[in-house]
Image (cartoon, rainbow, N blue to C red):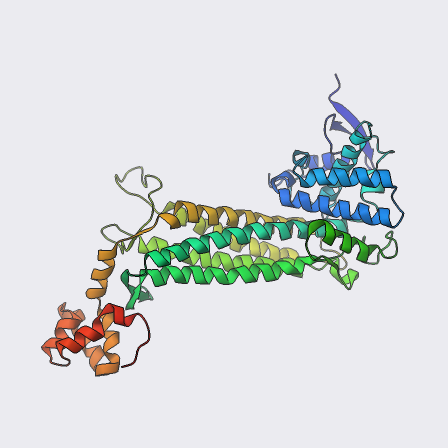
Length: 466
């Protein structure tokens, strides 16, 4: 039995798998672009974005009298099924491709057309009854449908990223409460500074990550401006009068996002500024997250020859040669994710800069870099929270002993004995090994009662009057 059907395009005939819902142009893309191994099917929110766009376009064409009612309803039904998760395995093209996204746009057009044909009782490939180009792509070009679908995908993906971020913030905040009474030494430039609590340290991690929620959401809000109706370069050729505004309105109704038509479609078609600024927000998050992981690795270092102020949950044996060694593998893997995100942001920058004249043909690698970053960050945030943060415990006595023996507590004496005398005490403590406490008493600088009050670590955790 023949396992293929023949379809034709500008370049001639090509075999397409008989049961495939995609068609000849998708098959050419499969043959041409064996690049990243990351397929469109790996990004379900992008596929949903394509279905949203095609449904909005069909609705607009129907309302403007360009598409008959029965075909519109079948197209809408097919798009709804794709949004619900059906047929995602029929999007097998590589995310990185030439052609400015034409292969992805045609992949969507062909799948929807063949689903509609099946609903009409026709065979796949009988495009005279429902055409990928004449019906599904009606009043559109890849140059408006594809970037709009990217934006619909990113708006959905940002919601998931923010949810993951909120969960890890809550985990750090819970640890801040748990550790609020654990006195420890703060450090600057890896040197002893002044006392603080471990709770303050973990609350600061929550606070710094919390700042990025608004940055991600504010930057993602730029994706609501779309260029549907621009067709090839923004002039609107082959789109009817009123199409742009009506399609944006329909897309808003379908997605629930406040979609608006760009005020200048010629400007909007090659513009990739929204991708650049959203990517920068993810880079900022990655930089912060990596710094936190660096801290966790330092604070848990040891156990005998490091700081050893906290314990990370042991996840796996740490060495093939050193018995008993356990490594901080979860912060390590999150560090590496952050490096990848930072590198992908540079890819986005280069891709955005490479736009020429009325179109940016580098949108495939640009969109792939951003979507890959979102997936990486979502997975990393979940992993760090579940397999590390929630299981961290404090070594309370280790922390307290470091405070008691630290030279750094001499800073608290500055307001009482002056910087110069405090410096002399610190220097002598370092040279002799004596404690700051004993040296102050030996020299009769302060009474024991006053010294105990000043150097009580709990009195050094917040501003107070002399």
